[in-house]
Length: 256
Image (cartoon, rainbow, N blue to C red):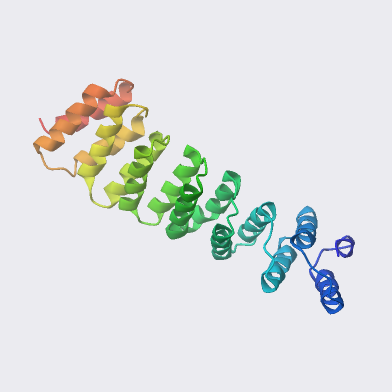
């Protein structure tokens, strides 16, 4: 069957004919048989025929090997079938097949463009369930998709969960969460996130963070809670530069 794929533009038709002959002859079609064909199609740069073979595998009740399933995931994304990719990801959960971080990232990229926040959140939850050691870049892509999908409160919730789980978050993570809360009209919660980051350390606040702070305090009432949060930021963040210092001064002057 693999030999039938070699000449010319690859298609699934030769394989389907061979499989039909095998079925008539009572010849077993194993995972290894189909995996070999899909790898050959991958080598030839033919995602659509490979996906046709995968559909045949499904009909015959044959599960792909982990590496092949990950390859099929990237094919589905490549042809623009993000829904199908997430569906395959769910199948992989039931088969206990673990994608790599690289595969997850490849799946997240089109979600960022489409703003498909439900799928991005599901992917994050799947990585958590499987104990995948995803990095800050991967987390920030998820946060960005959630924010772009209008889920500001969920963005901040995921940020807080990740920080609480001891995972590494950075200034981009914080800024994204703050923007989400600003859009959700919860400015005080955003300021408190920044105050927590300044107090606990580990995140180097940048000028963008302080610009967000200035935007936020313009929407806040003059309360002791607001003043206390601003004082805590002033006292605890020792890394700010001159520009950030000036932005903080403007924020503080709002309540003088």
